[in-house]
Amino acid sequence: MKIVITGSNGFVGKNLKEDLKATTDYEIFEVHRQTSSDELKQYLLVADSVVHLAGVNRPQNDTEFKIGNVDFLQQILEILKDNPKQPKIIFASSIQAEIDTPYGNSKRESEHLLINFAVQNGNESLIYRLPNLFGKWCKPNYNSVIATFCHNIARNKEIQVNDEDVELKLNYIDDVIKEFKNAIAGRPTIKNDRPEVPNVFEEKLGTVAKLLYRFKEMNINKSLPNIENPFERALHSTFLSYLPKDKFSYPLKMNVDDRGSFTEIFKTIDRGQVSVNISKPGIVKGNHWHHTKNEKFLVVSGHGVIRFRKVGDDKIIEYPVTSEKLEVVDIPVGYTHNIENLGDTDMVTIMWVNEIFDPHNPDTYFLEV
Image (tube, rainbow, N blue to C red; front, side, top):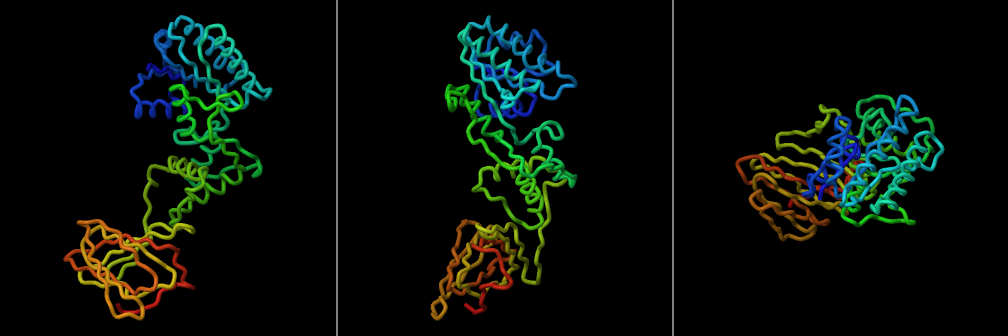
């Protein structure tokens, strides 16, 4: 399959071409500002599918809308008339085609041009009226409010929210790319007789801003996004892609004593807390039990033993643990327990607990195993 992508260096174009290169054996022909007329013709005459993403949305004057959107499409279609394969044409239009503005009018005129060409020439055409898009590699301070907000908030810069209740209609870039790939393969999503990218999010501008500010604080409070919410999951991934290059890492507070250290890594309201415990050789930690709090231990370096004794019983249960055989050990409620490092080096244990530590209700009671 030979795929021509116009606007291949733009936001959608870059995501599409890099995904196709990584996941298919399609031959990709990139069309961008540096592509010559001869190269454009050469590519279009051998194409099996054309994904037309190029266009003008922020010109210096309105006449450029027609030149960049309508006239360029006309140029493409004139060449495609001579392609005997009658390639499929996937066109990225905009929901603004419904609005009487210079940009919207140019998109609507382009749609009509493509529809007429498809009827006359027999090419399959798919016109996607895309809403606002967001995701990695989108240029900030250009025409995407989410890209701008992500970029500025990650750098402690001000953002401007004129009306928190403005509702945004949004598609995530991964959903767009998945749909375009399906369209190339002959499996477009059709809704109300129109091709459509699934998973349109409708979110208020104020909600978006608040989420992004919360993401920024996650490194400090060691929290995580709600990954069960598809919009929050996608927005968080997008935010991370705008971090400054010197902000990819962040320190954790290590609670150190002569026994080793204990460090919280992540905390969530609904998924508990993850920590790392380091025990020096010969050290025993624990000797306590819980009513409701339950834990999972995983030794990832060194070896030792985890001991249990049911409260009120005398029998001690032992579980040997070693990084040579990774094994999760559940710490059930009602059992006093401890963990001892039996090796000559530090023992490292990843610990999960089902709730964030509450100093006012620690649910931890000292009792020797």
